[in-house]
Image 1 (cartoon, rainbow, N blue to C red):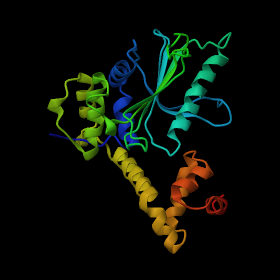
Image 2: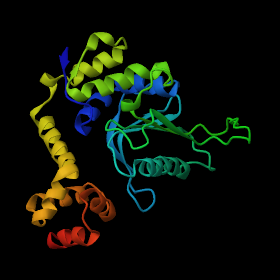
Image 3: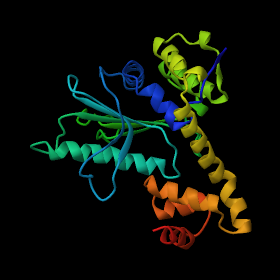
Image 4: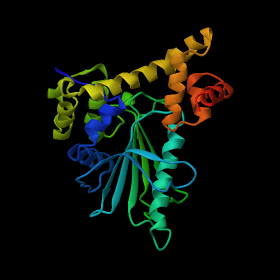
Length: 270
């Protein structure tokens, strides 16, 4: 058994999947395309922003040879289906700006990994942009695609077998211990080595603690805080979420407080 840091943490997920060997293998297995990059960007943004909302891609790579862009998203939000559709469309629009017509030069794929589960309890969901006739047959005109992957709901009978090891491995890390001998894919073995507990730096561990604290606050902290009034801890957390780009409506939804209270915190700290 190997002791590992859970892939539920954003910092650990990026540490593992920003390695080109891992990113390439994951993309090839889930998209069944030729894909090979030497560099994976983290927290990629477009300057200037596309539209009125700045999209930030957790992991982003462009294969110029095979004319493909893949972005991988990890963090779970209440609106993740809509959020990452918006990000995907921003990537499409960024390509269109550089084209002579509306056909982007590169195929765009978005992979969303939901390590915390999802209310719909589906293993794989796909937004396929290719037009289809009334019989459901695609015409092969548009390749762009979004795939939502939820390892928690892997179905051994229905989920495509080529996805099994990846989904099992991601889920397996969540209890901080994996039996590495059951996995045959070299890229997964590489993931386990990268996220081995002994390989986690003090800086990464500090970020993990921050992420853990935010998750606990979402679950319990705000409810308890409201009983006693807005505490400094809630104050600080609202400010952190605001600085990370969450809008007031979403902060209020996560916090379980009114938008007015969120605004009061932000006004006091201008």
